[in-house]
Length: 264
Image 1 (cartoon, one colour):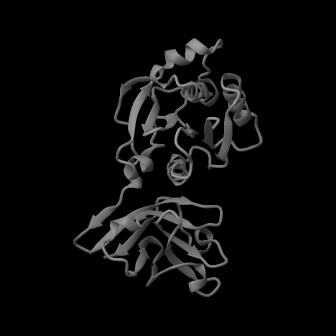
Image 2 (cartoon, one colour; image 1 turned 180 degrees about the vertical axis):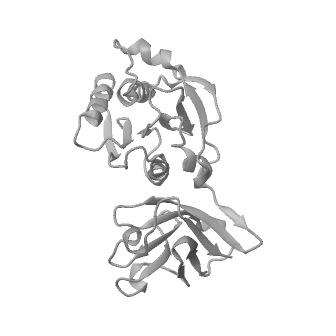
Image 3 (tube, rainbow, N blue to C red; image 1 turned 120 degrees about the vertical axis):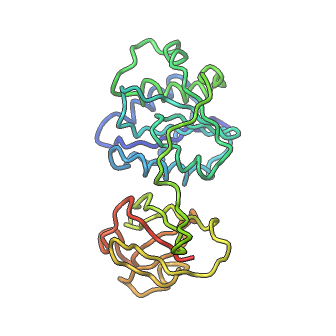
């Protein structure tokens, strides 16, 4: 099977940024299958990138390479990293993009990306503002050409975003988690994962800042009447808050990083 490279960026579709990355990839590895996860992440939203990377990870075959470029620190002293889990790889800035993947996949190992390997195959200067084209795309091509060892400079502990973790408030018998991502329908996806609970029964869910309380976790949207809020375990087994036939973020005033509390 031809190698697969998945692209996840905040570039949008009104400029040539994503296309330029694809051009570099195909120039270095013409047989590639290129998959766009999305280029519509809100600009500089690393937390959403972290969630979307994790949500796609398990559904691609071994030897897939993910390129994630949501990079507000491009050109700064931040590192570039290459991370590996079994035969899958991700190349990205060391800015927290792999935070949720690291939380959920403990075996993930990360390395500082060796820039010299990129410079050896590219006959142009690396831009200080477009590392997606000049560093991450060539790095992914090297991996697809079985030259990943040239990229792995030294193992590193990557920068991690604390928002992907939950807090067990034993005093108040609450499991607390931030909203990680708001999808295109306005559903609000929290950091609380179903695997953290020892029993499957429903519990009250609260967003204290908005004074919202949902007394039961339902199975799906149709368990409530149209226009009503609903808490449910989403397709990735994270606790989500939605509104049937509506937009929970707009209707309930929920924003990314707002705190959700689940009664234990």
